[in-house]
Every structure is written in structure tokens, then in C-alpha cells.
Length: 229
Image (tube, rainbow, N blue to C red; front, side, top):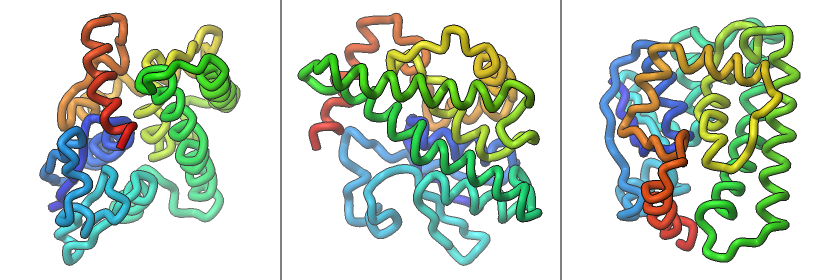
């Protein structure tokens, strides 16, 4: 059995989606970020960075893995699924996983901070991160022009990207004209495991449909507390 320490964020959804796809038994341990539970000593013993997600694999002697990308690789290697085992195929998946970890995630995260959470609105900074997100989306769109998934077969790279890209509206980034990306997003959204995974530990509709201004404002005000810590 796997314990999943998580919260309703894109990085958390990566792991719940993967676990749902793989059909591995797991129990959810909700980490209340607004209450600062990720900074408590008992959690820092598992994840010294004080972030989510973290897993504890009790089928492997209580082995602990933190960092969402590392967890995805661990789960894929544990099961022999969602990542090819031949060196070339594995490398392609890892390349696109690293693209998400180093690009899509950090840039969308910063766009969220300055567009939604930061009390002072700095237009040049907001534009810088939103433009970079759009550029990265265009890279994905080009990659998907002649294939259904990023590494040809469905993999952890697709899971990692979709968990973030699906929240593009919250970052204030347009996907207009990115037809291949949109087609891939629709394909991902139709997968039952993806649908279940983004409901764990709770759904946050504001991130995908932020048109509800009152709810979006309340969520952003709560998130400000995390940004300012």
C-alpha cells in the first residue's frame, strides 16, 4: 500500500492520476497547506523541502519519495508501465518530463503568483511569465502535431503536463490557435483515471474555470498566504 501526502494542486494531481492509471492501492493523507502542515516536523522528516506531494511505499519497506517527477518515475519503474524500458524510449519520456519540471511548472507557477496572488500587480512581470507559458505551450503544440501523446505512447510525461496545462485559464494564458494541444487536452480529459485523479483530495474548479470572480478571488486571497511565507 502507498500513502500519498497531497493537496489539490497540479503537482499533487500528477501523482493521484498516475496511481489511478496504474491501479495501485493507496491511501490519501491530505496536507493542509494553508494551515502550514507541510512545514511541521513530522512532515519535514518525509519531505525536507516542505512541499507536496510525497509518497511512502509500504510495500517497499516504507520507502519515501518526494518531488513529483521523481515519484512519477518511481511508480513507472515499480510497475513497468507508463514509461518504456528500452533506453531510447525511456529517454524520450524523461526528456518531456524534464521539460515540464523545468519549464511548464515553474513558468505557470510564477504566472499564477504575479497574475493572481501577488498583491502588487506588475504588468511587465505578468507579461513576461504569461508570454513564456505561451511559448512553452507552442512547443507542446508543435510536438503533438503528428502524434497523439508526447512520447508517442501515453506516459508519465503526458500526466505531468496535463495536470498543469489544464489550468491555463488560471494563469491567464491563451491556447487559441493551438489546435494540437487542445486536441491532446481533450483526449487526456476523457481518460477516466485523469477525471478521478483531479478530484483527489478535492476538486478546485476555480483553477480551470476562473470565471466565477467571487470564488476565484477567495481562492487567490487564501493562496496569497502561501506566497508570502
